[in-house]
Length: 239
Image 1 (cartoon, rainbow, N blue to C red):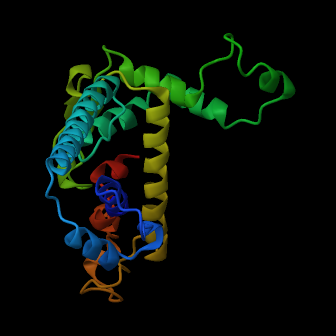
Image 2: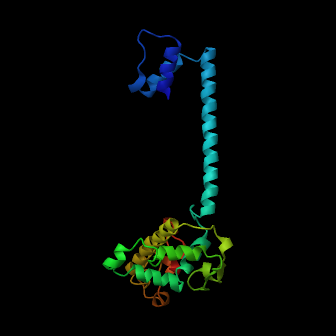
Image 3: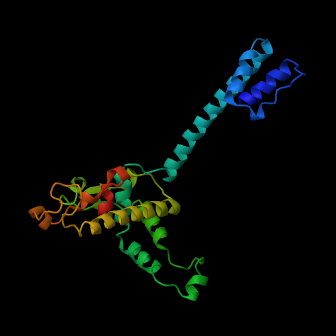
C-alpha cells in the first residue's frame, strides 16, 4: 500500500527525473520518501479521504455479510456447536435409535457389485449419516440422556433435549463432520485408557500413580481421561 502511495504522489507532483520505482523498496525507504513528500495539496487530502471512506465502507459491508452468514448458518444448523452439550447429546442419543443403528451396521458390511452399482438409486436404503440426520431433524424426537452420576457430574440427572432446544435443521454434511470429530477424540481418550493399564490407576502425574490403592482396585473414572485443554468434553463419555 505504501508503494502505491509513493507512485501516486510522484505522479501528482509530475516528477519526471528519477521517477521512484518502489516495488523492491524496504519499509524504511518507503517511509522516508513519504515523509519527504508529505500531503499538502487539496487533491492529496481529497484522495486520502476517499480512500478512508472506501476502507470504512468495505469493513461495514464485511461485518454485515458476516452477520447475515451467521443468521443463515444458525437456521441451517451448520455453524460451530461450541461448548453447548445439548447438540452433542441429541446427536449421540439419536445414534442409539434402532433404525440408525441398523443403518450403521449396514454401512459396515462389504457391499456386493449390485449395491455398489445402485448406490445412487432412490431405492437404496439410507446410509448411517442420512438416518442420523433425519433422526436429529425429527420434531417428535426427544433425546433423553440417562442419569449416570458415577460417570460425570454433568450426568447427575437426566436431560431431555427437544427439537426446539437446538438449531435446526442440520445438514447431512454437518452431522457427518461432527460425528467423525467425536470419533477421533474418543479414540484419543481410549488410547489413554489403554495406556494406563485399562483403568488400573496408572495415570501419570497423580499422587497414587504406581501404588496399589482402593481407588486403583475400583479402576479409574472414565472422566479422568478427558483432556479439556484439548477441547474434549464430557459428551464423549456417552459414546
